[in-house]
Image (cartoon, helix red, strand yellow):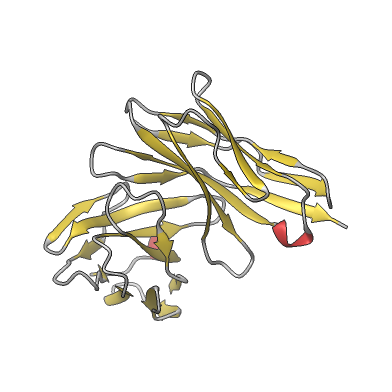
Length: 115
Length: 113
């Protein structure tokens, strides 16, 4: 069975500093994808970044990077130079490439950026 | 291009009532799915569809029905609402099942009393 674990219910970070949000996963699929989504207080789900299990380089998208350690089954999100607008819930998700490509989500981490 | 639209935005039902949550996308996406989000939890997959005429169950399908008669629409039906179905419901779509980005609708907040 697939599982996503986010162990940090809440995190604080000072504006302009970097922050790492943890995500570990478990799957028996050989090929899979890992995602991060942002959910601001307005409620919409915003796609941030994607990492394929066979990608050799860590994914980056602007201030977001995904620290992918396959052997440890971790896919941590790093946000550099935090901004007040980064305050939101962040969800890690995984999609296996078998069994209908179902996507499962972790419970989320709420990030608070302090001025 | 409206993306993924959901109606209604808010709904209050009494226990035992039925209703349909609407979801439509105008991006010609093959893959559509329904999730529910409960407090303190991430999104959980209810049902999904890999194309018109094809649907399958996700993690929490009980109490919900779906059909996919067109590529654009993927309605979610609650046959007999229960308080445990109080949640925020999200519809999502992607170009195909393996596409790395899912586009989410704005959500429907459902309360069952």
